[in-house]
Length: 356
Image 1 (spheres, rainbow, N blue to C red):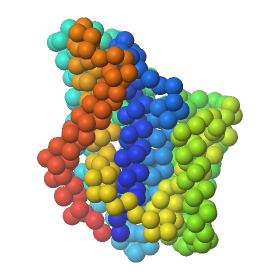
Image 2: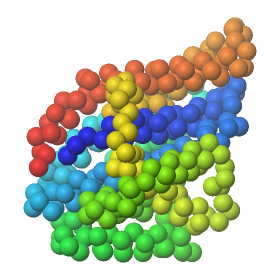
Image 3: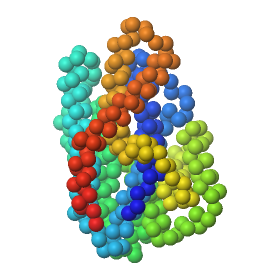
Image 4: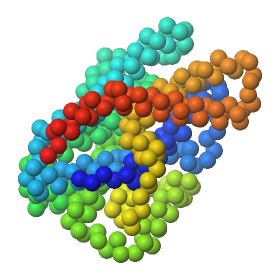
């Protein structure tokens, strides 16, 4: 399949939103100056939701194409996912538990770990970190793994679904599952789905859009530039304002799912040959998985540094906030770059051998 460079840039944009969402939170928690008054600084969870839509779009597009060409291998699919996700995932799992249970006490930094350690480890190791995160809150480095867990759970469901369902029935089955699950998710009596963020409908809706695109059912959206511009304008409003913050939770989720689905489609297929050609930006998108996974580690290091510098009163509050943001981004990208080049890339090269 052809690469979609606009989606590489989108990944970096979304990862950046997650970073600027977490910086004020940890700074405030540690008594450092912070700024979180702008709507764009509070859209980290929404950025993760769009990540889900994007993942569903790409993964289900890949599987659907392979299925149509009689080349889909469930074994190869899982090997590819394992080689892409798990090496870095388990590295962060190991570091995260060591950090909060051994490194912080070693430096006499107080942190409460008053939860069931064995239960948290087992949940995290066996692809249920969202339950561990929202049940125990084991620490920021481990908390961000909740979204990776949702994707892992989705992969465990979607591959057998495509394997056993006939190609000509896949779309109807996916639509039924998506809208059926969306309704169940919001019913009373299923609060645990909302508590632990089992938001699979974001991924499945991305898949619905990708299948519609592959079957040439969305060609009418490509006839006029106005539609693409309107979708992009709505996304800008979504992330830079609060006009989509409805009191009705179900209405907000519905609009979010639909808007994100069509935005991903616009960026990848309905962009009138607009391409983001900045190599650095696209590279940052390529290493965005590492950016997401390492950013809390980098943020902890930067905050620790400024806690030590605070006694010298070198900077005013504004300069401190700016420097924390710049250094967190810089250190995160450095971590992600070296991880991608020297740790992840060998697994990715091996992963390519299992492509159809």
